[in-house]
Image (tube, rainbow, N blue to C red; front, side):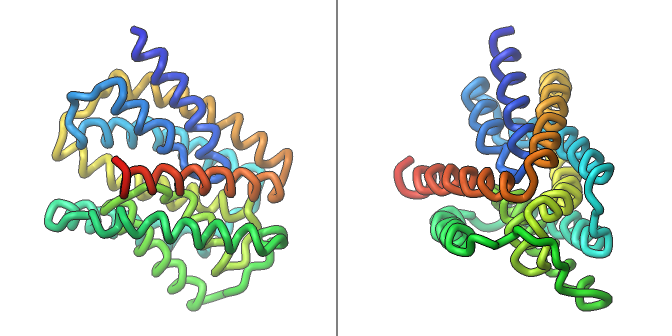
Length: 253
């Protein structure tokens, strides 16, 4: 019972953060591994995805009601992410992900420095592409992030937000909204994979899902009320936490 209360609280906080800029896995995954140290990785990662997909879906719906979603970008990116998340999950069973583990901190540092130095980065929503160019760039972004999420995963939501700001000209609020659509696609692909290859903790996932959704609804309210400037600040905080976590995992653990 204590584990359920602990994980429910972790899911609520993870849902709130994930709704704003992604990165909820920073809280939810370590909490699951702490509560069930003897469970298989597939079981815990799959249970995490089951819980988080509900919060991410709630965030996507919530943003769609309040923010004009760029569906011409979101739809092709989500479809590509869904397909390539399967490919990434298969690839990780064939080759080790150790190289990516060591490379990740340096990528995140570059993202943080770029975002911090460009004070107006993501402050104005000015889409840069239209038509087939927008579609193909969205497919490339979705495919790359989908593969990364299936193959390795940490920081997927935050990478999506950064890429939609940097390469599509979205503000942070619009980028976060579109990122949720793509994230849902990645999560569904992962659930199908882990559901096939591992035994998931369905009852625990249901409890965590409810708390994840409640946290997500709070995160949406905060993001919409305070705007892109607030989302940018939370983004930098989450990326900084990801940097510390990835350095520990790659070089100290």
